[in-house]
Image (cartoon, rainbow, N blue to C red; front, side, top):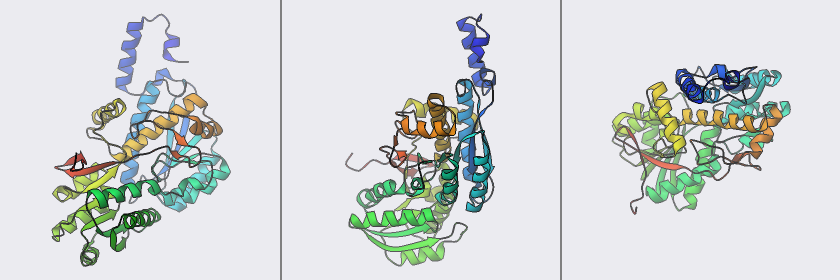
Amino acid sequence: MTEHRLLPALSRRLFCQLALVSTLAGPALAATSGDPVYIGVSGPLTGPQAQYGAMWKQGFDLALKEINADGGINGRPLDYIFEDTQNDPRQTIAVAQKFIADPKISVEVGDFSSTSSMAASPLYQRGKLVQFGFTNSHPDFTKTGDYMWSNSVPQSQEQPLVARHVVEDMGMKKIGVMYLNTDWGKTSKDIFAKAARDLGAEITTEEGYLGDEKDFRATLVRVRDTHPDGLMLVSYYADAALIVRQAREMGIELPIFAAGANSPEFIKLAGPAGNGVHTAINFAETSTRPEVEHFVAAFKETYGQGPSHFAAMAYDTFNLLAAVMREYGTSREDVKEGLGKITDAKSVIFPKVSFDPETRRISDPSVTELVVQDGGYTVYQPASQ
């Protein structure tokens, strides 16, 4: 039973004052009752990708605070159980078995990489538990079955947009590519390279690297010696920052597009070397949409800094799933069916969220091109504008 039903004698003004105090203080636990509705999260809290799990938690916790302050899921509190997998496919399988066997889990979220998530996808499909891969951009992620859903723009859609920006806007006609040697990195690189060639560009070299590498100088020499007129980095933010810094230290002043530059952490790690680097992002902190302005202000008030793309995706995902469960129900089958039915859901990433029933991906996604400049981002504007 919710708070306003318990206190019918309160005046409207007094109730509003109490609600405001409760919201500012944290989740309005008194406004919810009964057993929590649980989301199971599979992701990295330790290991090489632990920073991404930390960003997720920022977004999850802020969303949870607001959702529960607004009555939770039809009066029940929303909560989550975060199982640390270190982004290891072997651990995601063990977590999948645990979540599937736990009847209180309504939906699973994660894992971080498509490789780790896809290792567990067959289990979630057989167990009839939705696996919602909100950072899983591999085009094959949702192909395992109808319990795989994602609000991440797949590389099959994003990389052709990136290639057009790199070739036509940045003017790269001979491109040296460095890519993270994972399934995600190789798939993204292959799609980008094909799209760039289709636009008339030449790929001078494709150099893979491992996620734990710290010294990229030898690789950068090989890339430089193929005489490209620009560099394309298919990367995460930490390795992108190292590559950019080392390239500039070596006197390589070529234009750079870095997939991993779409995080404030890239700016911190790259320092002045990051200036002029181009990237693409779905979440634009500078958007004037009310949903984005509210989120950015609340995030800064809570954490003392602006949100990363990953925190924004986490926040968006919990709010989306809460909207689905409020409207269609909290059972596992309710969530699956609800994702296929929900339309025009509010979002800080996209103008509105609906899903393509065939691909179980966001309908009509878009990306925003950004340029790193003076410790921040500016939205790219073509010279003609």
